[in-house]
Length: 301
Image (tube, rainbow, N blue to C red):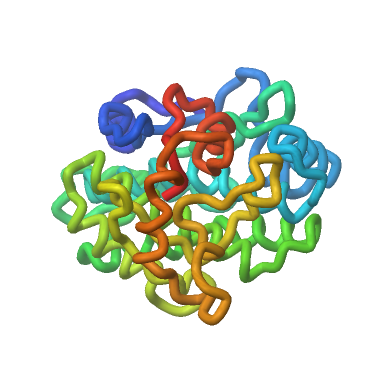
């Protein structure tokens, strides 16, 4: 379905491309396309051979034959690419794109890696005072708290089939996969706030979206390490099991074995000088390559 450039969501996502932080922008392609290489996410989940090829390509890229590692990093990449523009529109313009579980497409590179996403239709949620709230593709909600919770509902509906499929294909636990979704959502909201100069609104949204009941019951933990704002992850992405053989800057494995659930800011800060340096042991570097980003961020936040 072709979507006019004057569509309010198209305009929001176009403006999102001008909002950047650490090389990432807040826009995304909108509408269907005849360009080769695009696969509806629903098809990826329904086609076992296609999913197997995608997982194998991730494994080849990062140097790991383990299916749990491949599933974790595929979900890292896809979650980041999807949630960043959704969070960007929500934080910057109080509009929440609502593509639904079958409303996105994933572009696979020649080697099978995900290299981009697009939203297939223009459904969005807005506040009553939004001048586009009466648009045929808009659903209006009463206040900002409800708008933030719409993103939570959309994420759960979208990722439930993804988590279920990756769990069956890899053996990676559902709980671990949901922690990945929560961690990347927290970081996407952090970046969206910094890119649009609305960090307070982004942090409030993260609390509403992630500090509730399962499966997204992973409250955001924002701090600074080496002068850089980061989210301290709840879950490990398994990057240390790739050829990089090192943990990310904010990996929960950097804490003591006595309390894996509580990340230690002091320990992270002590390791920051070495960890902040760009290296191949960096999950965001992988995500940047997988997303086709022109600038690879220096460390996983």
